[in-house]
Length: 455
Image (cartoon, rainbow, N blue to C red; front, side, top):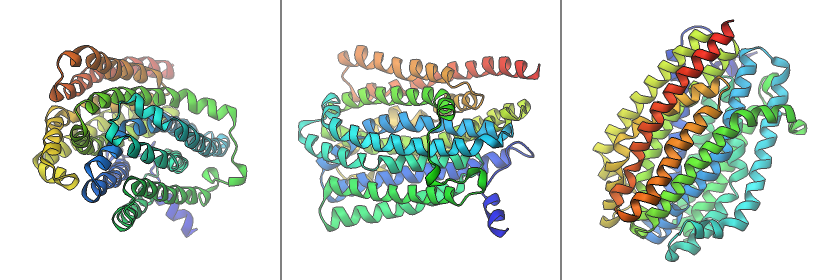
């Protein structure tokens, strides 16, 4: 009885009672978990930057875009799992939940192990396509191949966390991430400083720490209440639930992939400025990720709260979810941007003391990160659309607004204006375009869907 009460304390009742306090309490662990994950990833850069070499730091940094490309594609599918389960919970389709949960976790294992094979054979070709500098190529290949061995654990952690979030539990994934992140930092120091393993060391630390976080999330699910309990003997992909998950998650995954692909192209342009530019841009990108994690926490909250209330046909609460998540995403990001810009030199100093690297980092911060809060406009409205089972619309808009536009900019404007600052100005311009389009689409779809549901 006590154990059941403790588990229920981790859950949030999304379809009854107050909203704003629940959204905030749900979003904060999500934001903390994502920010910690990024900070622990940043520890890889900090350790190799401080205790290895600039080339080792550039090797790790040159892989960031391709790693985000791959992870974004498959993590997008976890959004489909979150929405599918949220709608099932809201509409009280309890007989479907457990089979859906087992399909989600089985899919995570399959995707993860497939990525090990793909990554091992394609790492060199990927980095050649990205025009990674010759002086860092071999180190970058070693790091990327090592990183791919973490993919099964990364998939299980994220898909398992999506299952927990769908029932209102955003706290325990945070606990798992916190513990594994501390282990990651300790292992980084042991492997790189103690054994002088440079990029191999940070890669191995990533593998082992992600195995820990995945194991903890899997343990949580294996000891859950019956509806959500995972039995490893019952892991099986059922076509019905895989199709539902893919219908919602695949557009989000494709969006993430194309979005990351545009960043890969931009990274290729960054690479043309040399190793110092790569290192500086990579160090500055950690600012972006911290702000994005906060915004994305409210976007994920929008998905989960909207899906449950949409399933329960509580449309007025869906409207409130949009307003509150948008306000939360904007507000938190503005605070993060202001604080980090004020202390930008001190923070960058954690990663490097090289003045040339720092100069490139400052250029990126001034031209992109200073307006990063604009992302909330399309992330939250897109999350609400996905919660209403409309995932294709925000995906298409994001592909056009943030991806196609950026590619056109890089291929048509930058060749004649080879300037590092101009390269990064493409980001805020694309954020404004995508935000206006996605919010407009949200209101159009919402009015149509809610009117049809009321009838």
